[in-house]
Amino acid sequence: MDFELNNRDKELKKQMREFTEKEILPKVSDYESGKISLRDLTDSMGWAGIFRLVVPQKYGGYDEQVSCMALCLAREELAKGYYFAAATIATQGLGAVPISVLGSEAQKKEYLPELASGELKISFCLTEEEAGSDVSNIQTTAVRVGDEYVINGTKRFASNAGLSDACVVFAKTDPDQGIKGLSAFLVDVKNPGVKLKRNLPILCKDVLGEYSFNDCRVSKSNLLGEEGQGFLVAMKTLDVMRPTVGGHVIGLAQAALDAALEYSQRRTQFGTPLADMQATQMKLAEMAAELSAARLLVYQAAIAKDTGDEKLTLKSSIAKLYATEAAQRIVDQALQIHGGNGVLAGDFPLERYYREVRAPRIYEGTSEIQKIVIARRLLKGQSIDFDL
Ligand SMILES: Cc1cc2nc3c(=O)[nH]c(=O)nc-3n(C[C@H](O)[C@H](O)[C@H](O)COP(=O)(O)OP(=O)(O)OC[C@H]3O[C@@H](n4cnc5c(N)ncnc54)[C@H](O)[C@@H]3O)c2cc1C
Image (cartoon, rainbow, N blue to C red; front, side):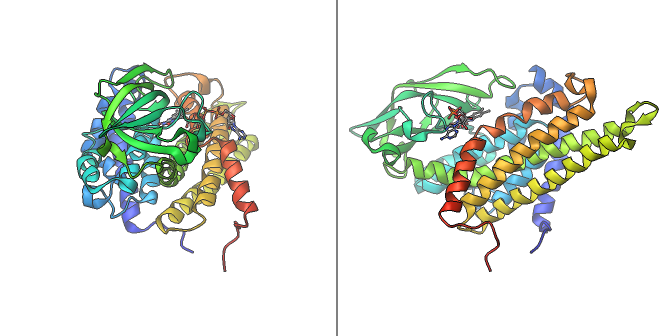
């Protein structure tokens, strides 16, 4: 068992760290205030080649096949700078992976190179008002009329909706078939049948939105794979992306731990630095132990994806559940060590980290849904022990 990263992964992690330190950290307050737009941040990531990580090499990407480990490492480093950088690469991945998995050669050639360069930005539209955890309840329909499909419905919580040029839309082509009647379509947001209804107020502008599709006509060549393969493509996409949510939050938790280490040595009360008080040391030690466990679980899940391990779903659900919940606890403890300064916006980052750490426990499957997935796998006989 090897707990070391290989040289290529180490080099990638180093490059992402340098990008974060040079291009993201000095501008965070300007992104927060809207003085610099998130489009600028996305563009700079595109120029730096970061979106190549979500596309296979043949179409302009970084690795022969999209590497889950590379994506985890990238998100980990980017999250130490600003959550949007780590989230936007995921959103690009949520759009690109379905095309890699199920797209025709023509769709791959048309979309993947521009997704790799960042010229094209994409959203993933699965969630609806009545279909969050319960994807089978999707109400959006796509009806075949001649050589076209006509899409009607509303999608909520589409990440990057204010920035995207295209989206992958999940709609029922056969409403009587439940998830077996779900299909996936590529839709240009300039299509007259598509409307960005509103931005949803979370963290900052343009991050989340609601799209409505009103008699939105798309060519039959915009169908990804075959009718009825929508659920399959959504699950295959989440298989790649779910461990990377863990990558995101361990980066954020590491930044919180680093800030707590630094602050606790600087801040003196009762004539003693906080770091010399055992109560603080207990907190720091617990944070480090939880973060180490989370990091190993995330890397284990990434390796499971990249090696085709049959226990991928079990391992990635465990990683996402543990890492997101642990990161919440770590950020909370780091904030506590900062006292009142922890809840002030501005000079210290903890108030921002506290806002950033919450949503990953909800998206790409809530913690409760991960627990259901884990329990079902265990009850079906999969073991968390090592196979001999
Ligand atoms: C920041 C952010 C970004 C997002 N980005 C995207 C995106 O790009 N594309 C997209 O399609 N969606 C996106 N989502 C939506 C996200 O995937 C959903 O919010 C998530 O799946 C939960 O659905 P819901 O909000 O409808 O909650 P619900 O499904 O209504 O769940 C509410 C609560 O009930 C619990 N619950 C539900 N069912 C069960 C059950 N069977 N057993 C036990 N507990 C249960 C849940 O765990 C949760 O605690 C995003 C959400 C957020 C917050």
